[in-house]
Length: 102
Image (cartoon, rainbow, N blue to C red; front, side):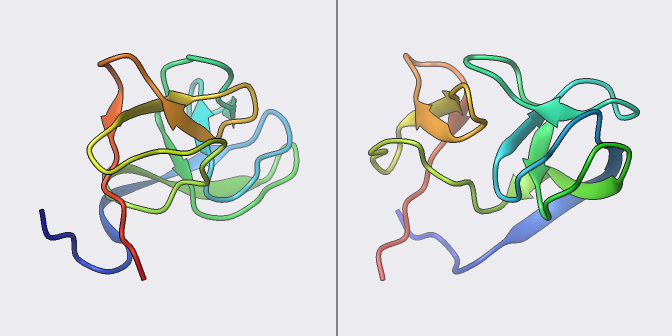
């Protein structure tokens, strides 16, 4: 499987942070009150930048982007959010990971 280098976002949305947001981690919740996604919580996107409570930030909600891993993830694994919004291996549901080796 060949994966293009870098990010290829298709849809980027502007969200308002309801708490501290860390870049390159999953985010969840409504657009006007987004939080860092918790363990197994359905993500609405991946934060492109860090943000403080009340700040607006951009999140990739469709396409290819970088997500910080919270554990080892193999190419083709399905991933979900851990308690900190990092990607961890999921049991057959979630987003599919494509690992680029450098």
